[in-house]
Length: 469
Ligand code: BYC
Ligand code: FE
Ligand code: FE
Image (cartoon, rainbow, N blue to C red; front, side, top):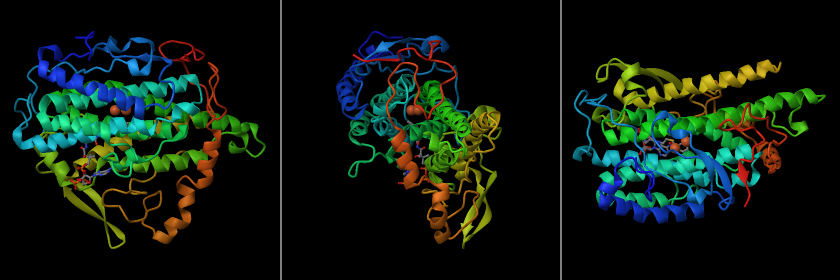
């Protein structure tokens, strides 16, 4: 563990001077990017943040006040697994690669760049939120997520520098040049160009979009390219907190909505300055469907190639599956044909995106069930539902067609007529915008948001998580 170097790391960076120099040259550009495209304020303030200091389970217990530009962004890989073999695909059982196999170089570079691109994109999307944080506790959580997404960019840039030579260094520069939502140089994947300018969207994003991150990382953790597997395994430990922020954030919104309903003669949370459950449902529909797109096409030759080459596996490939070749099985997918859906058997390897999407959907449903239990506990009769996977898709076989939230094919006219039932309306967005007022008194919460169950790292909720300089 080399913690006190310019770039903290557990990859023996000081033993490889060329690589160290290359990364130290990239570092100031990264800091410039952070200052220019990261949080719009609070950069000079003291934030109570955790920093990884080792990769064991205690490595996370390190909390202290730090100014964000001084955060110790490090390079950490999970410990190597003895005699690890390629977990899936045509080379199943062969020793894993420590270097990039020439024939997979382009595909691997592309996967790493795509993964890396989402990390700074999310920081850019969230950069203005600190001005309207509903509490100091939430403001700190936002910054924690942001610095860790910054570290995830470091994780991918390390792989590019260490294993892809000059092309890798060029890609690393370009990762700092693209900008979320930019007309000329947008981020690669669609969802990462959507604005996140209110806190309900932030909670939805960390619930649904960071969870795509979790599943993509689980798939990459099964990669035969061992450095990728090890780096993503460590990233997954950080990802858990991001989804905690999302799931508990939405939880606190719906709990508060229930309390406000009871205070209102018409059970109208909106009239009491809250977010009503119908509005929350429409935000769920938007962010969930947008995040489903991130898994790529249902029937994908790219996915088949990635699996065959052993670059990407299924989530928990070792534990959950028996046939790691997937040469013979089929997967049944409802394919649109002439306005109807026709069930088709697709060769398993071509359906790998869909297999991963299934696991993702189940994981989301478990979180939504917890929200619904909280609503029932408040004595309110309302159920939040995940829309069908075909609803509002912009990527894959359902693109350009129209479905209701139950997945039934409908006409474009009907979709447009009923859109305001299902997706955030102008009036929803205006209402949410109106509620976005900063709350900076320690321990206080915005009116639309319930208090968290507990503080961070055993600290009380009224702890001064953000200390203004
Ligand atoms: N937007 O075979 P197809 C995270 C392209 S989130 C735009 O259907 P494939 C995080 C695709 O590139 C996790 N383009 O899909 C979360 C292809 O282009 P070509 C990020 C898209 O390739 C919150 C064409 O469409 N990690 O970490 O199997 C905060 C047809 O491709 C999109 C990864 O994504 C889209 N949504 O799968 C911070 C892992 N989808 O070949 C961070 C790495 C597809 O026709 N990425 N296309 O030119 C991958 O493994 C794959 O690229 C994908 C797509 C799963 C994304
Ligand atoms: Fe990330
Ligand atoms: Fe994340």
